[in-house]
Length: 302
Image (cartoon, rainbow, N blue to C red; front, side):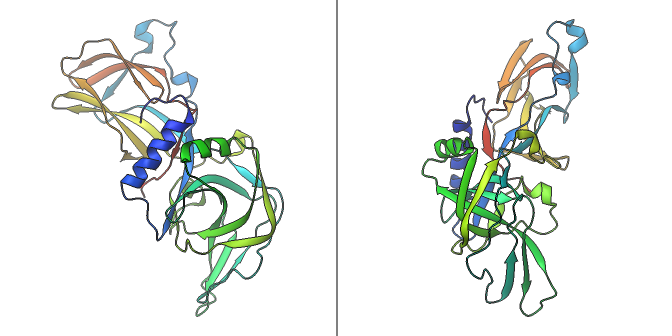
């Protein structure tokens, strides 16, 4: 991750990375939640007015030196109850959906057969059962479709700034088996039948909720991990999902064996002062946390 002061560069670069890495596929489509970082607890920052020795932290190889939780880039509430305009069932599966007032949604981007801004439900309002085994019921999420995106960064930036939105088209998505409802709001979800969309009898109206209303239970963390190498050391950008470190497509920050200290490094808005590296132990101070004004596409591994 790089330091960015606006939403556009982060979202655009990660959207492009997803396309180049083969994440874009026609069947199924992928739906990526849009995320942003929560603010770092001020208690974790070094007090510039305190004596240097009172603010020093140390890390051994493998230790996390900075971490911040992420959250959805917004939460929207459905302001009116709506019903499908016709049957939503399939030939092999009976389906119903309860799109009632008060249902909450998170913003995401559909990638594959089309690139479009969508709002996906936190809860599972859809119920389905195989026609050959009606008792084997399952539940699932739905997403409402908004405008197609030709330049994802600019379009999404503008769309997320809108407090009121409406849509008449929705589709079903699959969030995997054994994943908690909360965690899935931060993971890629699949649209297995991208050719199938459904209309509602009147437009569904959505209102952006205050930031504090977004559910962040089970949210992953973005972090920097200190690792000793043969050439010196490095700080690795990683995700922490369920306390398990997951690599991301970002280059590490290299600390050479002949590094002159003190030295300040910046990464995605965070500023860290490196004070010393001796016998595999890093002494450092955190001066600022990751930027909270940037958005990115979340695609966390299982």
